[in-house]
Image (cartoon, rainbow, N blue to C red; front, side, top):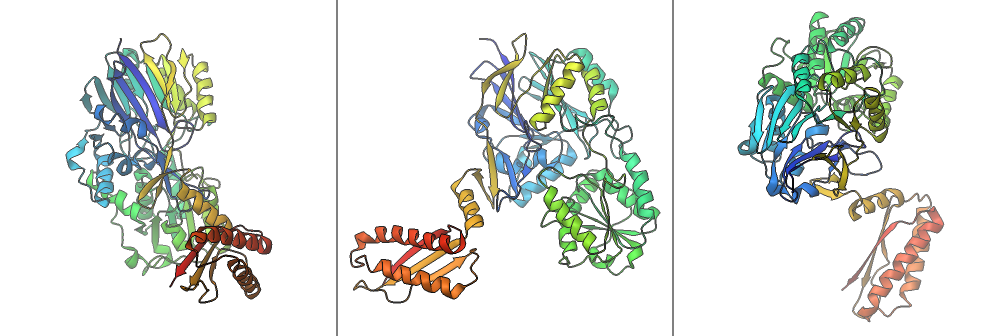
Length: 552
C-alpha cells in the first residue's frame, strides 16, 4: 500500500466561521495527522442559551494518538475560539506565532489549565518539523496581527494553506505580503492550495488599512461631541488608527470592554503599539468634556454583553452617551449578527446619537481577498488543485468557477467531513466521508445541536411551563388545593384560568385511588394531558408540564 496525503475539513466548509481542517500522511490506517485551526461561530436566536458553536472533533479524537499537533494560522475567534473545548480531549502540542500564542495562553488561564508545557511559539516565518510534515509559516496580511499561510511540505509534495488573508499594500502594523517568497513557493511546485473564499463575490481589491486611517481622521475631525468607535478588538491596526486619530485631533482615548484590554495588553507584550498615546481608565475619562475624549469599545456586532450595548442601554457604570454624540461602527456585520447589530444601531439613532457605518463613510476594509487579490495568489502559487474553504457553499462554488477561469487544472469543491485524496492520484478527489457535526457551548458544557437539553429550552421558549404539585395524605386524600406555578403563558384572566384548572385537576384526581401508589404514574400522565389541554384551549399554547405528587 502506498503512502497517502489527504485533506479533511471538519468545519468552515459550507459556512462562515468555525474553521477546523485536518491533513494526514502515511499508509491507510496508520497515517499521522495535523490539525489546522480550531474555530467557533456565533449562535443566533434559534438556539436559546447558546452563544458559541464549534465543529465536532470526534473523528480526530478517535485518532488522537496519531495527532502530531494543532497548528494555528492566526488569532481570530473563528480560528482559535474552540481551542480550550477541543484540546482537553486531545492533549496534544500547539504551534502558534507569538501574538496568537499570547491570546491562547490567556484563554487557558481562564480555564485554570497550564498550557505552557504544550505551547510551542513559532517565530514569524519560522519552520517546524512534525514527522513527515515540514511546515513553514508564511506571514501574510489580514485584519489581525501575525496572520499566516502555511507551506506544508510532505514526501508526496507541497500544500499551501492560505489561512485568512488579503493583499494589503500598506497594512500599517506588520509586514507587507512577501510576493517573492510566494512566487518561489509556486515555482517549486504546489500540489494543492486550500484557500479562503469569503470575499470571492467582491470585485477589485480588499483595500488598505492606510486608506481607512486617512478617512477615519477626516470623519473623527468633523465630530464636535463625544466619539465612540466600535470595532473588532482583534484588529490591532484599526486600534492603532483610532489611537493615532485621537492624538491628532487633540483627544484622550479610553478602552472599554474586556476584549479591548486583552488585545491591547497582548499586542504590547509582543512589541506592537509601542508609540501610541496611553489610554485612560474609563472612570477618569468620564470627567473629561465631551469634545476631549474618544472611547474605543467592544460590541460592534450588537452582542448583548458587549460594551456598546450596555452603553446604549445606559447600564454601563463608567461610559455615558447622549444626544449629538457620535458612534462609528468601524467593522462589518458578521452573518448571523444582523438583527443584534441593527437593534443597537436603531436605538442609538432613536436617542439622537449620530451613527456612522461603512454604509455611509469609508471606515472599514475587509481582511479577506477580493477577486484581484485571489488572482494574484493564484498566479504566485500556481497550484495544480484548488480547494476552497472558509465560506458558504455559494462562496466556495464561485471560487471553483473563478479557479477554472484562472486555468487551475483541478478545482475540488468540498463540504465538512469530505476526505480528499491529494496523493497518490492523477486527479485529487473526494473518496470518503468522515463524521462531522456541530457542538454547542451550553454554559460550561458542550452538547450536540439536536440535544434534548436544547430541544427542551426551545420548547420552553415557545410554549411556556406549568408546574403542578399535589400533596396527598396517607388516606389518599388531597391535603391542600393543587399548587400551580405557571411561567411564560399569555394569561390575562389569571383567577379564572387557575380556578377552572384547579377544578379540572380535583375532578380528575377523584377518579383515581390515591391509596394505590401503582396508579400514581397513570395519574401523572392524565394530569399532564389535562393541564396541556386546558392551556391550549385558553392560550393556544401547549406548555411543558411537570407534575409532582408529594405524599405526607
